[in-house]
Length: 295
Image (cartoon, rainbow, N blue to C red; front, side, top):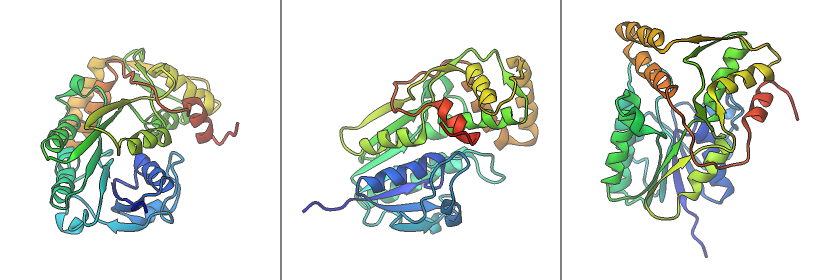
């Protein structure tokens, strides 16, 4: 008789987290989901990610920045999967508070409970953006994970379809300010395709896995595709990097957390992000779904 393995999914209400919950469940795992707001997962996400409230075996409401709320989170857990990270500016917490210290609190409990494997989602091209605060936080945790003694896998996606969804939102408004010339390339990956890679990583040796999607586009091409999907003429205004960097400096004077996240977006536009291709879902179809068009 095969024992059913139990997985903790941290960051379960996020874009990737929801697909990961669904993928783990479809493969027969028991899922304990850590969320800050259980109401959020009762409905579909903003980028089409599934409602997962009814398929989760155990929901734990907690916040990794409040250690007492996640006490015992790894009890009876075989595998930890974490897509936990700060994706929007927060008035009180930084990337270091969530991406590093928050994940470290889970890792410490995983070690004490003898969890067999810890799968963590970091970032592709991290070596080219090492000074960006959010990247530093991710990589501090990666270093702690590698030194923990737990069997591990680090997944390194180059960009989610939900990230490209921001271009779609801007295109709907009728205009996009594009930093730089938009000639750098990326092959972003759909959450469901990425979730398969993440669950596959439960088995095997300790390793880092860079992940992209099946189609390569320049940033400008993704913006043009977004305009096309919502039936608007592309209106894109390039902004030079020096101007955007000046704006970043000013932002930092008033809102350090917003500036830290903006610095990642700005730096990421300076080089290609082409990672090994996985999956079958296409960005053009994703934009069409966002526009309410069925193919």
